Length: 362
Image (cartoon, rainbow, N blue to C red):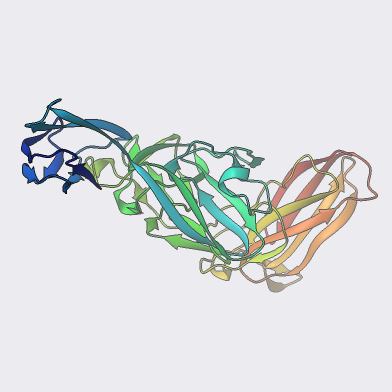
């Protein structure tokens, strides 16, 4: 909805009789519909544009039929569905998105105070100089602040997703996750995870925020400001304790109110790297761990080792060698002093073992 007004002045010596005011668009209402304006006086006409369908830009004409020369008088009105959305960000990492159609989507234009690149998720993190609608991004800020983005409203959008974890964006209005429709219909998803001093599950996709969601298959998600479509086509959210990938860099545990339900080992980032890279992994609640019998005693599999090996299988670095409480972790390896080439890293805990490769390029 838009509001505005038109001021008509009578610069003549006789009364200006405006017999009628006609809008070419039935969704644009003008009040009053007629008026008599005395010499040297003026009359303000109030416009209310209340569209019943989505739009980006609309042009309408108002005709003023009057008793002076040059009747009818014309006023051309342009309505742009432009908004300014204001969002708070915290110091350190934030999950953000662009919920509007903007004229310049460069990271340096939209978020000039960010102190990091914008990272999207493409089965690993990828730096993006421009941000796209529909995607979520990691951005780091030096301190808490308020940011604003202006552009045309996006009250409905389609997000392409692939099987596994996806970092999605938002639209211009809040969306309840239970109203999200998928193609194919009834797609199975995890909860939707936001970030703020750790991961948390959200019931609403708010404008400007990015969210992680894990889906069962490739397809599309539809976000709309109004609940549309058959309930049979809505997603089916099946909660698990699995957490999304860790932020792009840094070390330590990621605090969260959600406990992982499985050991996981993520691909290191960046990869290839020089000379530092991060390893992300999770340790589940004891109820989900194997209990291992070692030398006649039952040992909790919360004791974790994370080691790096060269291509000959020789251990070259020990990253983790300790008993860890449940949670999601990030550890960093500095390969300064090592030779360039391919290496392998292994996470072991009880019966769990996973090995991935990494490449050190100088």
